[in-house]
Image (tube, rainbow, N blue to C red):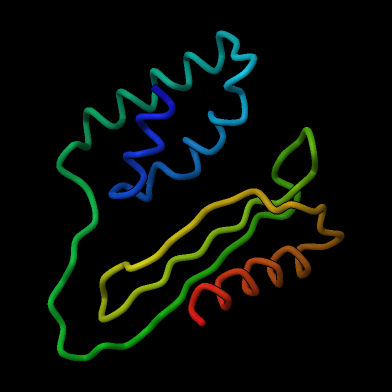
Length: 122
């Protein structure tokens, strides 16, 4: 089920973080992970009409949003970073991923998130 939800994140970026969290426990899931999966499936069934909306716009402005939460993973103390790139008001690229290294400050975590988003824009 988590693999199918991972595919669904292509059109439902609101699921990305939760699916990423569930993916970490694929080898040794426990009851709490199954409960979280069932909660997510309930959310998906109630919001089936939501997804990416592409808008026609003559003003093609490129905007990028980025964020990071410092040391969010309690087990590894690694941060989760994310970005969203929009062109003319429509999303064209996004990502949410746990950082590969431990950041020593919130500023460092934010810097790493901005660097990843900048590389995507370039």
